[in-house]
Image 1 (tube, rainbow, N blue to C red):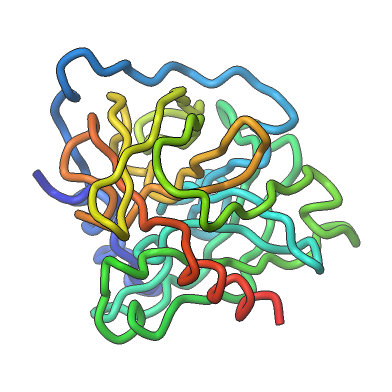
Image 2 (image 1 turned 180 degrees about the horizontal axis):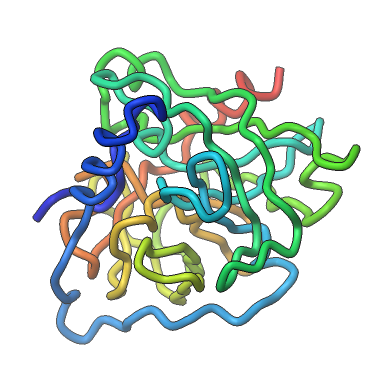
Length: 248
């Protein structure tokens, strides 16, 4: 199976970008007895999740991202491989559309202004650092957190957490979601089992009942080789340090 997410490409190289997006699929079912994601119902909290796409909300999809609370109210979290790779560099022309459904953009489309990744991802594509914080510009004089709110970042909370995971498969114009429990893949990687997380869902936030983001689809196997099992870098001191860098 090819990796789930699209690898970044320069927007000037549209043919290469299209090939990368098409090559980024997963395929076949999940673990026996595991649930399957369903279409997410619209809600104000759910609308903090949106699509990362090229130039416009209807442009080629890259991944999923979500708004996290920050001092300036302008920060998203996603997987690092969604926005940058050693081979291609930063993916240009990204925009974020929170709450996107069936072509409808209820909160507008926000331009990406800056991307923060760990140097070990930037130089090595190290899956232990497959997290990125994305700064978006203002829209109509407002920061994105003023418009849709933001989830707090949850670090150091360990494994075995009940979370909901919401994201946008590339083949759908509606987000999917699943309520699951996290488990340990390794001391530094976590996982959950739920079917339906195909290409485009990398970067989807893992949100606890109190609203904290404790993971994003990424990390091991760039988030997973099948749509039934997904991974994340454990949100520990590495992620806390990266968040600090993005907000200072």
